[in-house]
Image (cartoon, rainbow, N blue to C red; front, side):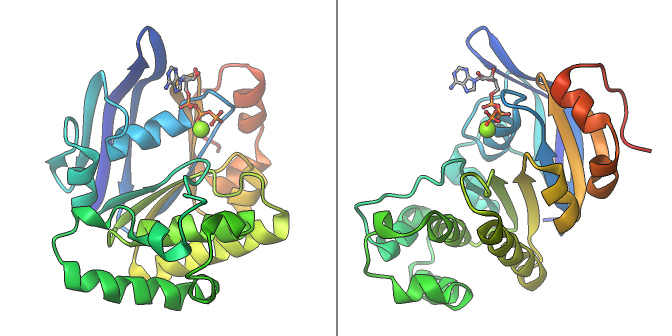
Length: 244
Ligand SMILES: Nc1ncnc2c1ncn2[C@@H]1O[C@H](COP(=O)(O)OP(=O)(O)OP(=O)(O)O)[C@@H](O)[C@H]1O
Ligand SMILES: [Mg+2]
């Protein structure tokens, strides 16, 4: 996958507009943070890209393939995976059963076992707990499991919604270290929803700022953390362009 393109995309829930005419592109191997206040449309944007929310307008493309109107399963086959907000871990299933959820869409059944072993190599803690109920894992471990499950579809592009939610700062460090390592090792393209600009700046990468369903900034996360744009996005004044 070389490029994700989002062009004039709108998402509505009935009469409620969640995203309005959002456009941006992401290159292969890039790391893009999406930030903005509650209700800005961050999750809706991720859901629209992976086919979990219908677009009411616009076009989403990966390598020239149009994603609009395709099922989430068909989009996953093109190499996109989503690690959802709240993680969606099945607490009464084991760690390994959670990893197998979703592998039904794969045609290469024999490769599934290899991929499970690879996830365990990336996450030795999950290997140790493979037969434990996922509900018994800590929040940080559940986040690692959600990321591990995302890897099971062999993605080129991973969309991660608020991985730091509810985790202690040192655990958030570990989660980001894992994501950065995966990106390096696999050449993954990463799109991460992260509310903390300080965190995004520390990890490094580009940042797209949303407010009220619109893109109000696009630039280097370090510059965002130093600028007033973020405050303006959160507290109200109009914010044209990106940080200078
Ligand atoms: N399933 C839904 N039905 C109706 N409205 C929805 C639904 N999901 C989101 N919305 C609305 O769409 C808008 C954007 O929501 P979205 O969840 O995308 O924002 P967000 O930036 O991810 O917020 P948060 O930081 O709280 O996760 C909000 O006004 C929200 O109330
Ligand atoms: Mg959200």
